[in-house]
Structures are given as C-alpha cells and as structure tokens.
Image 1: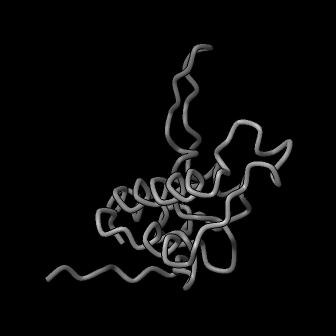
Image 2: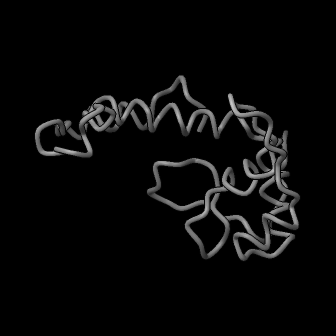
Length: 128
C-alpha cells in the first residue's frame, strides 16, 4: 500500500477541474513553480530553468512550498499530463480551442450537456 506524504503547503480543491494540488491559499497549481525550474529549448536557444529560490521570490511563496511542488510533480507528473488532456478535451468539446474564439466567443462556443461534461471530466483513461 502506497502512503502519500503529507504536505504542509499543498492542498487539493474540491470541484476543481484539476487533480493536481494547489499551493495552499493561492490559485497556483503545483505544476507552475515546478515548470519554472525546468530548462526550455526553442528556436532562439536554451533558457535555463530558475532555481527554487528564484521561483519562490518571483511567486512570493515560501521556499519550502516551492520545494513541495517540485517533489509532488516529480512523483505525480502523470496527473499533470492528465489535467492537460482533460482541459484540452473540454476546450475541444465546447469550441474554446477554435482559433477565432477570443475574437468572437459567442460564435464559436458550444454548450455541452452535463452528461458530456461529466464524461470528459471523469474519463476513466486519465489518472485521477
């Protein structure tokens, strides 16, 4: 039986689309501080990731909170990937992923039935 480490700075939000925890008392998902520490490559070159200390300063969080997000994400990256998949599926179903959605949301938005919303959110193929 796997026992989950108790975190001091992370909490889940009931009713949230996201299964990953948030930094307690904020709307900052665990992936946000963690992602800032990862080096990125693009056409313009390499961009080194920030140190946990820099992320803590930048997001105005305790260093220990940033460290907890890093630990959690390293152990549960599959949940973060599933959160993105869930968000993508919901955007596709509602038309929010249409290239012109922001300029004319009324034209592109499609309401979906609660049953369809639940099917997308609680997809058995995605980790919870």
